[in-house]
Amino acid sequence: MNGLAPSATAASGIAVELRGVSKTFRQKQRSERLRDALRGMFRPPVREVRALQNIDLSIRRGEIVAYAGPNGAGKSTTVKMLSGMLAPDAGTVRSLGMDPVRERVRYVSKIGVVFGQRTELWSDHPVAASFEWKRVVWDIPRPRYERMRDLVKEVLGLGEFFHSLTRELSLGQKMRAELGLALLHEPELLFLDEPTIGLDVLAKRTILGFIKELNREQGVTIMITSHDMAELEQLAGRIVLIDHGRLAFDGPFERLRREVSDQRRLLLETPPGPAPA
Image (cartoon, rainbow, N blue to C red):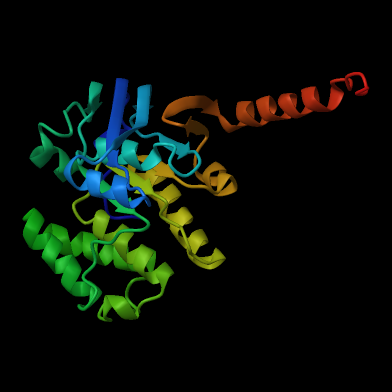
């Protein structure tokens, strides 16, 4: 990715810090019983879902961190909180030295966010129109915009479909365009939530290679979520596991493999108990 000066994120220091962060959602409950359903029209029962529970997490500048866990574990809630879309119920969130919610206007100009199951591309317009729209919204000076546009077009291979309607693109093409769009304003920090979901092997390889190059050459700090552990290990040396809203592991992949291996060995070596009578 020649053409850009190294980002300030290559400097030492903390990019992201969560301390004692908790988040609870309240969901209305529906009943199949007519009597309960009628009562629920006036005072519906509510169930509390504890999405995050007392989370402590730090990410260094220039680091790639893999963030993994089962569905509903709290991954997307964390990303939304770090991107300024949600506020915590308890605890503090600091990112790039700012409060993502209270200083959101200034903060979002320094981050990029890609959700694998959501899009910022206009479905009934060419990809080029979405790029131009972002230039206007972010007030990116045209010379800077054209330099970044041409760079991501080249590196991500967007030229072949840049003037095609978004709804006509394959999943892989859309995700490459989403990444390019997220990078137009040269963010210091990039949040990627399931960026390769549903993609074929070739599309995954292209996107993962680009992410590694972006971090290596520009020092962009990256947090990526995925269900594919092999994919995450290609990118990051450190993995954070979350389960039921709590951090279950934080460390290098090597230690995770060792601990999983030790647990398997313990199960295999545990002598069987007495046979039932």
